[in-house]
Image 1: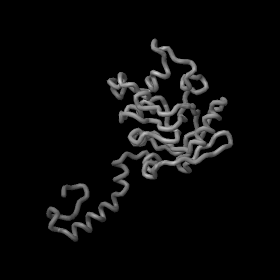
Image 2: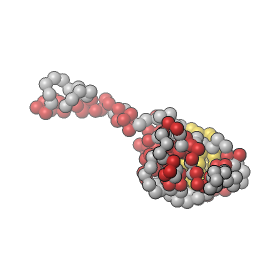
Image 3: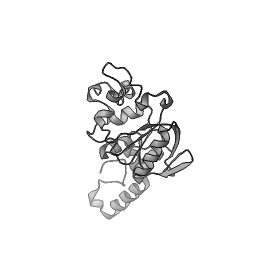
Length: 211
């Protein structure tokens, strides 16, 4: 995954609560292969009318929000079913960060595992940022290293699980995270081999070999 440290980009306000994964990507689009991309069907039933015509008043369809990499929403974003395709749809549309007061637990995990930042801000901060964006402003800076959001001279902190933060900053998967502890793992294996040789196959401890 691509590391995520600081994102300075256009932000899109989505002043809605309880945006669930069924809204983020309707189930009927999930039969397409991952390689085909899901960005064009993100929030499809909200962005488009029954005939497929874009709704001009929907935030992501506004010309001044084109290319948004940050989405700002209200509480309980990503609730509902556990479909990982919801994270795919956001990323394929170009979204790298979602700012909201709270998130669905499974959605948050899926987001981080795909390089998408779910940043939890205080509700008052989200409302202030939404008001600033809806006044016609566009650019924000999300700093994962400092765990802060800056916009129009204002600055707010956000929260994220420290392990998730480490993974996003380094572009790590769960396997990469485990391998980052390789020296400690090898030291434990060597000590365990000396302490309990009867539990090992003949030969020196080898962290890459069978036990």
